[in-house]
Amino acid sequence: MTQQKVPERYYDLCYDLKIPHVHNSLSHLHSTIKSTMIARALILCSFICSAFASNSTIVSYTGAIREGAFRYHYDESVPNACDTVLFIGVGTAMSVNDYDQISSLIVTGKPIVTIISDHDPRWFVKLSSKKFASFYNEMTGSLQSLVPACKGKDPMILVGAHSASGQASIEALPNLKRKPDGYVGLDPFKINERKMKIDKSIPTLEWGFAKTTCAVKIGQAAKPAYKISSKNHRVFYRVDNISEAIAHCVFTDKGCGFVCGMKSQGSWVRDAVAKSIHAFVSAIESGDFQKEAFALPIENGSFELFVNDEDPDAKSEL
Image (cartoon, rainbow, N blue to C red; front, side):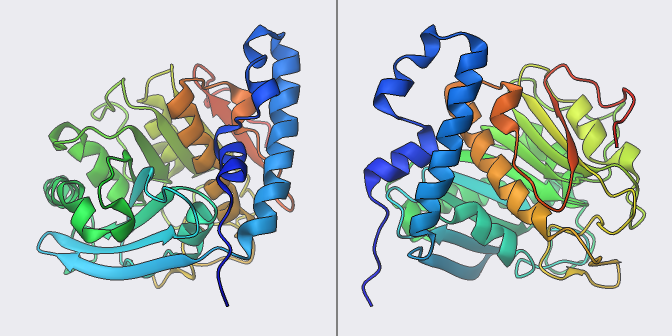
């Protein structure tokens, strides 16, 4: 059966909100009206893109370089599938094959390549910032030859990590030859607010939790990663897991084995993370980090959203 590709005009609508008569007039409208129009456009985008989702062709491939292992995913039915490349470092005791679900959600219908990366595949602990930097530097320099969709492309680069790769990735930032255009943390750990920092020019997107699970203390994870980021372009989603039915490894396909098993709830988190990454990419491109752009319609779950100068240490509503 021939795969039907998403027409470029629908792709532009869904990804960039380029609706001519609306896009050209938004800047002249009151902020409240602007928010309403954006919300309506997002609903329309969701409807249109979902109509083509069944025609997506996800390409996945597992490979290795001297510096580590990788598994990339992209939707070859999307024009310019390598506009953005997102690296996500694996967590403790995890492999590059453990994040297929969230990767597919991120790339389906979007011009994004997700590369799940393991900078230390021979060891279950992923804390080495030196190895993370070496892996990233080699991969970013070889993208055009390693990923077919990236041949001849110069994509936006996002660097990110889950769990212990979070510490490695943030500590590695000063040693990355190509400075990333953004940082994505999936409950990154172990983050020391006093000793670690993120370059203020790098926008950040963090996902974390209201309650500690799997020994990943909330005071050493996504919240401090948000706090050490620039107040001009930072986003933090704090998932309501007070009941402990959602845990630290919800971003993976089946949990983190003996380290942190999958709990009974939370499948909505992976889809929400994907949508937030789409919004994050759009915000980086436009330079507009308004909170309403990161509001997500969620069923069967809840979270708190903090953007820019909002304080996650203020009294929680969860």
